[in-house]
Image 1 (cartoon, one colour):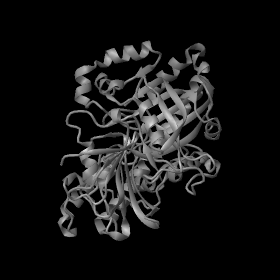
Image 2 (cartoon, helix red, strand yellow; image 1 turned 45 degrees about the horizontal axis):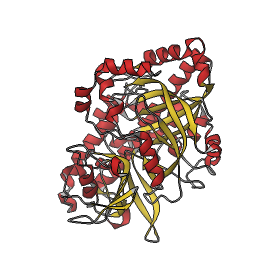
Image 3 (cartoon, rainbow, N blue to C red; image 1 turned 90 degrees about the vertical axis):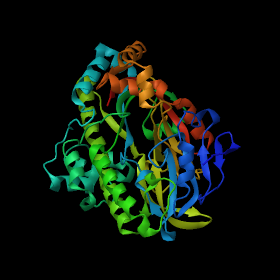
Image 4 (spheres, rainbow, N blue to C red; image 1 turned 45 degrees about the vertical axis):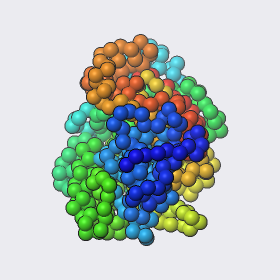
Length: 476
């Protein structure tokens, strides 16, 4: 399919309906942020997603869009449940409920310079945070019965078990747990993979980064979030590890085999799907919610490890600013063509971005809006943004910078040891799990996060609150 983009504004491009597309495609980006890499089929995927049964309004792509499995990463699509709308695991991704958590310390960056506290802190984090492919976690569960409690309770179960404080749940999306989890739809292979990985970063683009507030754009909102200039923060990016990957693998297989039974034809088998109200659809939603709760518990365990490190190295206390996922599908009600509709909203590499006074906000953030966490990559900046009321992409925003190089390209161009030396020379302490993994995540492998944040604001999806710069990073 040949994709033609029409520029509606400098921050919004349109793919008109053609072929089997049921709705247009809308790409929020500037021209320099549009997929440029040879072989990047993200825009074709935007058009393919627009063919899904029941899709409404448009197939959306965020400014960090790039090629993914079935859906582009940075893809948002909502289907009308009562009009044959489908659920597609490819619209969630393999790392179910991968997300970002931001913690704020009662400490300025000068406090970490005192007596080499930053080096001590990074050494503790580097020694204690499990990371890398298949590595163990901080909390080894006893077996399936305990795992099912975690799959149902998420971060709330972790807090009840002594890993955190009740206030943490007030600052978690869905209070740390999706309500419709069905552990019975999580296969034993997925459970086995997850038993020893709770409280671990994993590999790839996952990280734990010590940061400082570099710039404040909205003072009142920053204050409501508990952020101030020079403050030390910690950003954690990880998901549901092997358990989530196995859940996606298992249910994609089931849906692929059931396409004919529901009379669904697709331009790409990676979009395998089923009606939300069907048995495969309900089963996947229950399993996905369970895996999402695993991911939220995972970040809760890492939070407690970070708190311990900060207490030991600097005598500092960390409060949770917010925790939000960017690989989910959720049942939500939105107005479409003037009528409230019950929708299944897929956000893959896209985060929820609730505006001020939305009923889904915790009471202490009701007037400010929801923190939208947008990490960059090592050596660059990250952003805290906030949802805006004029967002027509079902209250969604970008989730990060977005890749422009494949991992193989990065390995051909960058040596991990050289990258570490360069980052250290620029004042960023690095604790990698491998030189190869570090090279794959080189800053040049990603889009300019400042440009992504500017496009996100220009498109009316979210506005910046603070900009964060890295002090030290623990890489998966």
